[in-house]
Amino acid sequence: MTPLEKTVLLDGIRSRFVNDINGLNMHVLEAGFEVSNRPCVLLLHGFPELAYSWRKVMLPLAQAGFHVVAPDQRGYGRTTGWDGDYGGDVGSFRMLNLVRDALGLVSALGYRSVKAVVGHDFGSPVAAWCSLLRPDVFRSVVLMSAPFAGPPALPFNTDNDAAKPSAADIHEELAALRRPRKHYQWYYSTPEANDDMWRCPQGVHAFLRAYYHHKSADWRNNRPFPLKSWSAGELEKMPTYYIMDLDKGMAETVAPQMPSSSEIATNKWLPDEELAVYSAEYRRNGFQGGLQWYRCMTGSQYIAELQTFSGRTIDVPSMFIAGKSDWGSHQVPGALEKMQNSACTQMRGCHLLDGAGHWVQQEQPEQVSTSLIRFLQSAH
Image (tube, rainbow, N blue to C red; front, side, top):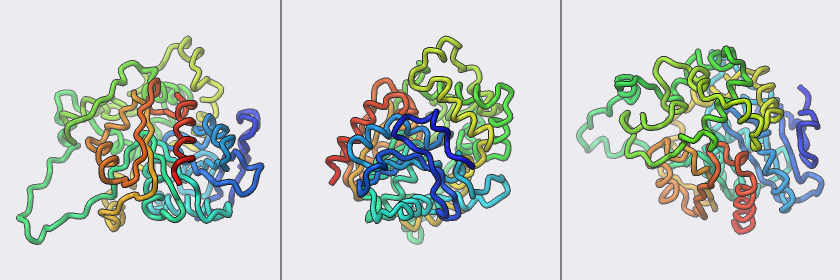
């Protein structure tokens, strides 16, 4: 595997590999590397993204005095050493091992601690768990587009309380709606999800264009609001990229939302030559590496070890950033409020940015960079 071509990177960002990280040869993008002994900021991407997703905020952070490191995480991009087979080592993608990946990278780079870990989308819970488990290393945390409500709770006082009836199965409820639906995270955990996107009729590039458009502020129907409960009647209010039609895959779901050629030509936050970086990586790898993360999140066997930390809070300085047009802030009812009121004890701000949907650091990089720098300069 070779580094990313310099022609696709801004001057001041380099692509290279850091080897032997928890079994991985990890591809990273770096900025601010020219000066030694700078405080480090670690940026963790989500799905279906790459280290490249941080390209627009890396140089402003470097110019503010930080060594900025963004890896292709386990299962993604040019990082190798992971098992992308559906029947393979799924457990290596569980949350505690993803934290171990981040910790190993920080240590390999010669840091005992980092100024902040910043996570977007599925990178957000990884960043949250990093700061919860190792606050001595991850000295502050920024969560983006996915609120962290705290570790999963242990059943409490069950020996004394009468057994409560089990909650209705949300998947049965969704399937029984007048318009039958299903939850995207459980769909992403199925064997067919990878081929549905990787081998889709429109091709990977067109699929990603429609997917990114559908979840951005460019799609005018993204007008999120808080949901009242984790029930089918509430969840079905979300767009179909989250609560899908029961009989459709993701590629078929987003295809009707493909922007026009003129909209693509005038897209400033993700021009076609930048999207081509993503599509080339996903054409080569497929999507299963990232989908393994969802399998660990929806599989009950991996929740038990996280319950070991039930009741623990994030006690380092924290901040949340998302787009105002991003349903990600509300897809788990009550999570945004729990994050602010109990899960994070030093929450310094919750910023919902105008003109951004789910891809906030790409759609509004100037606003995100300003918020990050202000936070980093005041966190300690």
